Image (cartoon, rainbow, N blue to C red; front, side):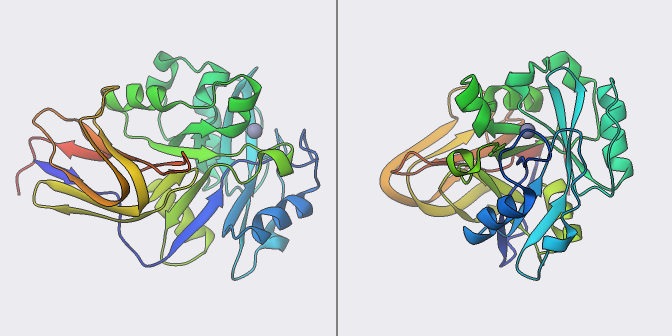
Length: 290
Ligand SMILES: [Zn+2]
């Protein structure tokens, strides 16, 4: 058995938001005000992802803040695909795979946005490839139609053998109300577009609405995790019920040894403020031999 740990445990963790709007499409604030809001709240990076608009944010990048020029591409109707770190506009296609390919052709990273709001069918997504992640929490959809969480959808994809990462994002249109609610934290050597994108693509990041993960290790056949104080740590293996659950008042460490047949293990942490953090899946190759 081989447990694939996506985490590199580098010293630097960078918090960022991968999905935000400005008044270049249907957001309320101009890009510079959106950037300032996130930068002032300690975010290390931000993507402004206006609908079918390429926003060149390069002027806002500094050594301490990375602004990713990006685009939320409409495929058809409510099907949207976020393209991170693009060189220019992605023409709206009516085909999902063409859109994902166009994002990749620019060296960008494709994220399937708000799968419940879009009603991306599982069958459709199983036929797609080259997308790096799916939004497991979209804050605006939680307020608009109460369907922002897509953990079950993610587990369905994972159980079907799709190796895809999970992203939490604000999708903020009205920044002061919707901004700063859900984010990703990327573990990377440096705050450069190359490093941040490479580690997002490799799954070396987690998603959160509050708690922090600090370290992930695989020791023998056991997955060990360290986090900020939590009231619950859960190990999820594809079933709605956790494979293992620890409860306490200020838990900061837990571990789990996968059972035969577990296709993957992902970790959820809940803190006393009811914030959550979600690790990426540790995929398990049962037949692997050293
Ligand atoms: Zn959006």
